[in-house]
Image (cartoon, rainbow, N blue to C red; front, side, top):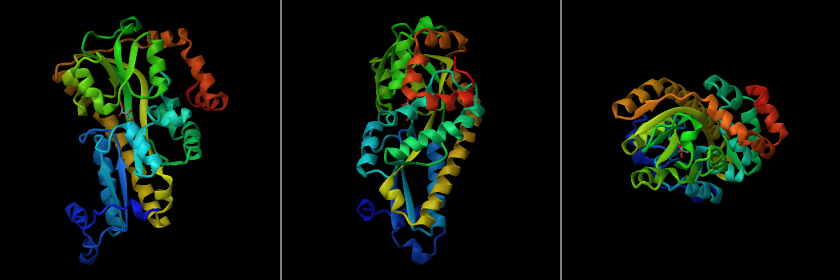
Length: 338
Ligand code: TK8
């Protein structure tokens, strides 16, 4: 199974990375090659950290295991990559649990519920704790292998080309792009907006051609995907936190010899921890870059937004969807969600 997926990469790639292989090794093709795909821009911290992990894995495996990193939707949209990993054509996929993963594993979106985390320590308490463990069990049951550490995609904020968003009323009828997961559509419908699902690789042009007037994303994505070029207003709504699961294709992951699997596991999880630090450290820089680029920035009070969701029955509805066991773990970690 494994061998069919091998790509002829090998010597040139290893030499270019300058990883100091012995001459004999430097010219041998790697025994195992895994493709690692995601939708983020080249300049996103995730791209640098995953490439750094790949270089260490190549070096410490003495050239036996090469992880080839494909950022920026090079392998297609999120839906394409999700299809590929299920079909065995992609080995590692980094994506939000709220996004396409939740179409198959509904609990994967749970951390995206509006306003449940006040800050990053609260996020990691839940996602490195029992909430994350629950979701990873469900992912495993669906036949995929989640690595332990989630990566940070940041708290999400709303941008528009038409007006600032300061109160929930400002969202009424707003044509806003959301990613594919049902939680996103549900939440923005409950805000009385008009959400449209669009894949990340089509977002820039959808904003540019005014198919939609608004979108919501992390500061990192607004900067690195250059969304500021096609948006005017940024409202720091912090309406939800988003992160990524790194998912392995089971046959390719389990087909690795145990020592190589352990090595890849260690470096990929470690890269996630480093990327979390990058994201936290970059917030201030990203924000000032966006102001410099001319975005008009507002900081609305968030309580009325949360209240609008309560009124619309949002939490009740999703509590019923996730079930009492998961809801209990969530409240144990976050406190009562009302
Ligand atoms: C990743 C995506 C993406 C996101 C988006 O799964 O599509 O807006 O921020 O990075 O969910």
